[in-house]
Image (cartoon, rainbow, N blue to C red; front, side, top):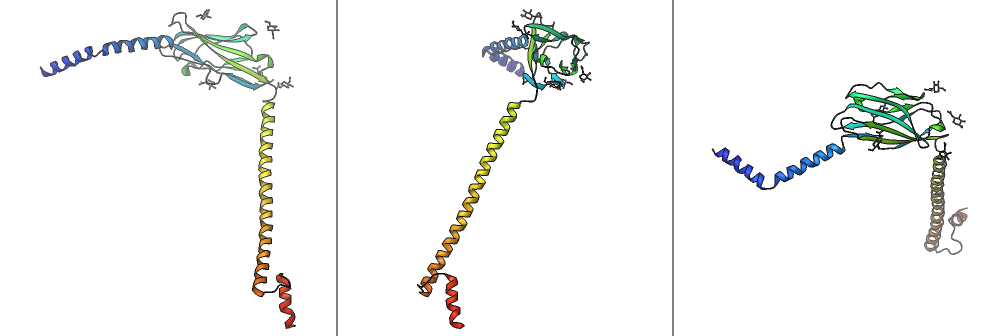
Length: 233
Ligand SMILES: *[C@@H]1O[C@H](CO)[C@@H](O)[C@H](O)[C@H]1NC(C)=O
Ligand SMILES: *[C@@H]1O[C@H](CO)[C@@H](O)[C@H](O)[C@H]1NC(C)=O
Ligand SMILES: *[C@@H]1O[C@H](CO)[C@@H](O)[C@H](O)[C@H]1NC(C)=O
Ligand SMILES: *[C@@H]1O[C@H](CO)[C@@H](O)[C@H](O)[C@H]1NC(C)=O
Ligand SMILES: *[C@@H]1O[C@H](CO)[C@@H](O)[C@H](O)[C@H]1NC(C)=O
């Protein structure tokens, strides 16, 4: 009896406090998120790579889907001065099922795995003509007509960044110069201080000897010793 009444009043409270409205909002929001983030393709945090000609390069791409995938179609395209050239394409029938990838480029190899939602490709023996934008494209038929893509840019260089090397050399030499200068200054300072101290010591000796012996003839300790030695002899 009491329990029933309590839950009844709780329900009453809940409905009255406007939480139903909140719950409705949350559900709407969730549906919105569900629609917008149903599928995502990504090339990762870094959207470009710089490689030397002749090397091989990984063009990364992954997908994620919170509603799951079925017959997910994907391809890789190279933007050749405006015309998109398809490098490879495949359909992933279901999650974890490896796709049968059709490859249209002699130096492209599919290295992804649907177990890791990975649809990356490898481009072998890069030439300067390979430089440009590579688009990773995907459609999940579970979402009607929505397509997703991410662009990865490839830069091909002859030698890895000569500019960076010169910059490094400049920085290193400037740093070395500054450190060398500091060392030289410190050495000079030490020498100067050393000689100053010696001079001061001599001055002190002079002062002590002159005041102690009241010998105003000369203040040098050597001549003082001579003076002392001469009467003995
Ligand atoms: C890269 O290109 C330069 C200039 O065209 C060429 O001399 C060099 O042999 C190439 N390197 C490779 C590994 O293909
Ligand atoms: C790219 O297209 C422009 C005009 O659209 C043309 O002038 C240029 O020569 C083309 N470059 C290459 C590498 O095909
Ligand atoms: C890449 O170049 C090497 C040596 O030039 C060659 O043996 C290899 O077959 C090439 N790979 C591809 C995929 O073209
Ligand atoms: C995708 O697979 C390739 C080849 O196995 C690997 O090098 C790369 O790190 C993978 N990418 C991600 C994001 O797991
Ligand atoms: C991708 O979607 C856009 C607009 O949503 C559409 O114009 C385009 O044709 C689609 N591309 C493919 C390959 O389906």
